[in-house]
Length: 65
Image 1 (spheres, rainbow, N blue to C red):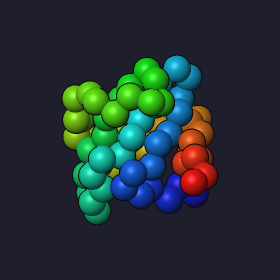
Image 2 (cartoon, rainbow, N blue to C red; image 1 turned 180 degrees about the vertical axis):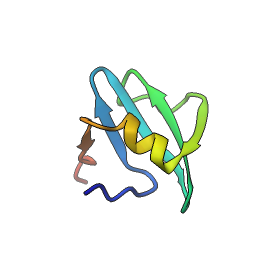
Image 3 (cartoon, rainbow, N blue to C red; image 1 turned 45 degrees about the vertical axis):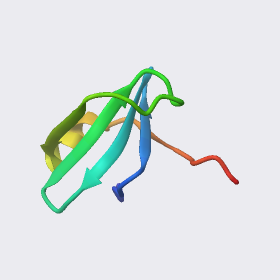
């Protein structure tokens, strides 16, 4: 079971999905081709659509400080 949280980064293929805003029904995210890039268009979808998008994706662990 997926536990979605704001700030998570998910990787699927060559794409990275960063959750910028998380709410009960809606997810806002940015899609990038490189992990070190934070700019990009904010896309808003339902939580159900986002979970379908992430099917088969892996959670990227944040770098340890």
